[in-house]
Length: 83
Image (tube, rainbow, N blue to C red; front, side):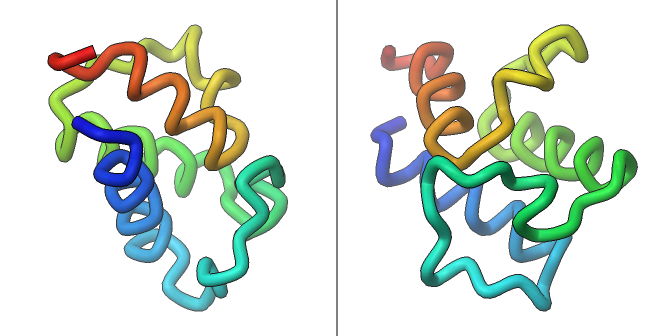
């Protein structure tokens, strides 16, 4: 997966969980949970959606590594099959 494809996957997962959030002007370094008001269940659903879409295992111990859009892209890029 390319970084652009991963960005699309992450933004799609966020928009499904927080449809009211304006993701068009999302600062890639902003903390996602605060920015789009994700509670712990929303964040878990976000991680599950990332896993289901990419097939990449994301252990709970790595959840903190998914705090921003840039972090998600970096994390998933490093683990993508063609990385």
